[in-house]
Image 1: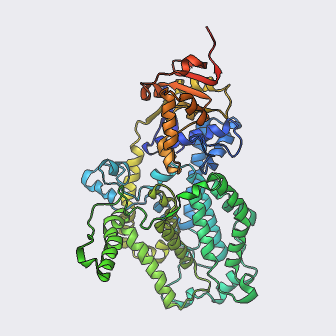
Image 2: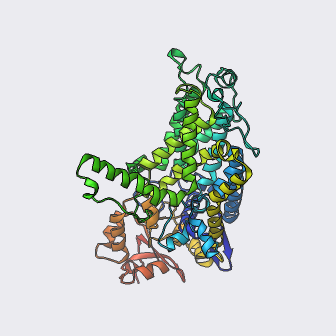
Image 3: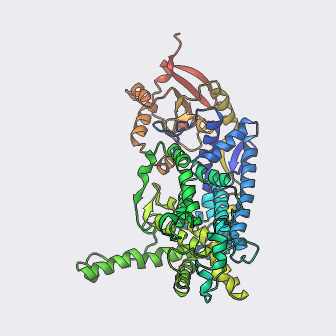
Length: 585
């Protein structure tokens, strides 16, 4: 989302995925840099505070204030964050985890064998073919479009690595130079016993390993995460909550002789107030919490992503009876989605993930491990991954059901090291190579196709137009609200100024009900009889009349031209101040 460049007279972007998203981030960066009070009103919705975890944009705004050019700041933040992401995945799970991040996919990309073309088969190409894939490229659909990931991924991986090194230091190093992961053998029951003497010394003793990060660094990263990425904060919180239940120590020693529980509880308690404050900020004082709802199935029943299959009707299989109804619900809710949605989207990943969960369960039974004993790393993190996936599967956390993938993807990240160490890494080289080809082939084709899709770039806005409007806006108060046509690349927005309504797609994904405000804005811009009342209700001080407004409000009578003060005008349009009367001639 950082790749913005100059091409002759235009500002362009490389990826079609973030034509709208990058515009929003530019708006937020400019808005912060303009000197608005923190926490600011939303620049894209008149009746709300900023409802977005914009920490990374605030950071770029601070760079702008110390005279770092916007384009240079975007590029360097993106490059350094990308290096941190690579290092984070390498530390977490070696080269396999790096490949899992870059080349996630299912089977869609293997259309290359038919077309011999590198295309984004999991994204743009699938949408054009009206066969949308929910398991899109993480790089193209998340990292490129949502700048919060630039901080959330490396910071989240750093915490996961820290927790693994702190509580599971004695486990075998994974192949390829990655840090410790669970490589306990399935035929060695003692390897997963929570009361193993060596492990007890390393983990359960009061002087257990402190871990790579100082306490205050760990707390700062975790507690500040809601300011950058709320879904990552939820995933990390689930990991800590799961950690509360691993050790079973009776009586008053419930914390003193249970280091994992003690540390998790201390982290949750210490972070409660600052993290709650940041959640309060980024959710418009918890008003955005209304988007949470029970929604089993993630996107498997979505009209946008669910593949055509067939479902049993209410009269089939005797569904009016108890057994028939159970059969119908089992088929429609589990069996059919598995073949029509999960396998086409995730391919071999589904089978390997289920195999890993089954393997951990078998090792628990084989080694007579019991809940309450300290588990090895693989069992601990796989259990946390299952809980994260289950939460994302059953609870919708955003207006668009696909956005739950921002949470569920952390379950995917958690299991990557253990898929290799517990399953794939134990096979002979031919089997490993074939498996990696099946796992990463689709994602590799998709990533290359998606990166090449932007050639020769997509125009965002004319530079001269943006600069002239910026000059006209500079003397106007930063807290003023403008009436403009709602679109993603409006020059008033790109200068960081507040408008009545931004791009409808952004408003919807942030959970705003904007229908009434949109009706009032339309009445105002068309010059309806009550246009002044509409302007007052929307808190509008300035009306901007430019190319977008002329195109989309062609029937407007523009009554403000005769009654409002003309602040500035040019080939780019005009700005009118509704609080000042036009001069009398």
